[in-house]
Image 1: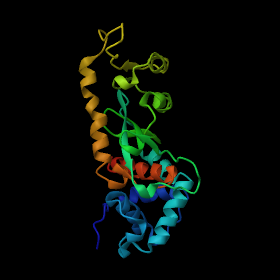
Image 2: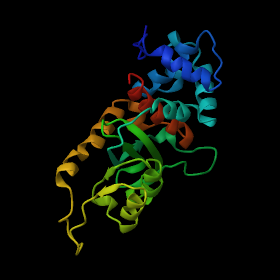
Image 3: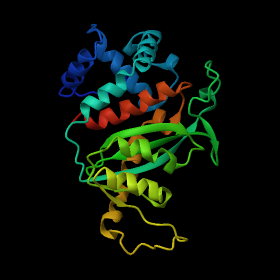
Image 4: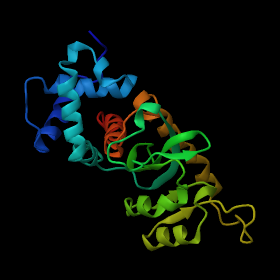
Length: 249
């Protein structure tokens, strides 16, 4: 029997959310979800799922269907309850795209792009003051962090302070944060004439919270390395990993 991820005290909570999202309560529902989580954790091909989870083909078809309808993204939104919005940290991190993730039938880039590391995707993440993920975006690895900041910040309108590194040094980003009623804690680049006299350095030292969250998410090999051809499927994998962090809360 392969190692399972869902604890008995957590499954009823997740099961109720899945039923709320119009997922049929089949007898094998728990093992189907366990199969998806197993693949997320070990990064194996779908065909190599242990038979204990059931038919790999059925599990993949359900995962693909749930991804197409955004089920895992909706599950994550439901699980993100009462986040600590006093501090919100944003950053981006690369995920190496495996050669099997190339060649999607859609003919689109599917959020895979060329960067210094070769073919990569990038996860743009916002975490709360407790280091729990509250919003994310997936782009190609060549996309600059600051270009995705606007949509990411718009997803956290209640943030009191938004902390980011120099990659987000932009007056437009600062203005958006202030307009939302927050404080921007972003150091200016060395070439800036304004300097960092007003930077809350004590708060900025906590920026490692978002790095810690990336480290926790990348425990799962299908997050750290992208194996999915479709952007929507990789988004579902990341959403599953984020949801799993929220499940015990």
